[in-house]
Image (cartoon, rainbow, N blue to C red):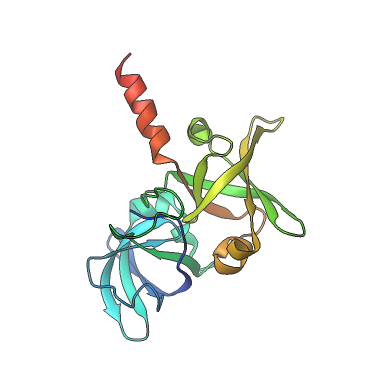
Length: 203
């Protein structure tokens, strides 16, 4: 489990093809400081298992084809910088919200509106995820825990949501670098999915 509080921005240094998977070599001196093979690290919000810890603050991890198809990790050649977070410990603080590291889908940035103290980012929301997203609720973008500040649907029927990024988030995560049209990983609040399941089981 993760909290959506990014510990550092790492960089994908190498991408090697495996049968039905790829192996990534990633730099991340903070997250590798106490990492061991088998540990979990969220990479842009995707929970991955450490295969090996290498000198120089690097680690390797394998990404299955299914994960590549469902996330932005397939695009690390064009956008090699990634948000990194270690799994939360039992005595750690839950500073964001419960993030599983199971990406539900991707959305594309529709617009970015800067202001003096924050930047409002609007993201296209896949129709199958729209029912899980509520105003003032939580959502993870590329592994970053954020609060939904607005919801809507355009004239073409495209659902969207907005988040407001404060200077700290812009400075310490990759979200400041995602261009209009760029894709981000989305993980909706797991509590909403459990509620839907429980309500559905009574019908």
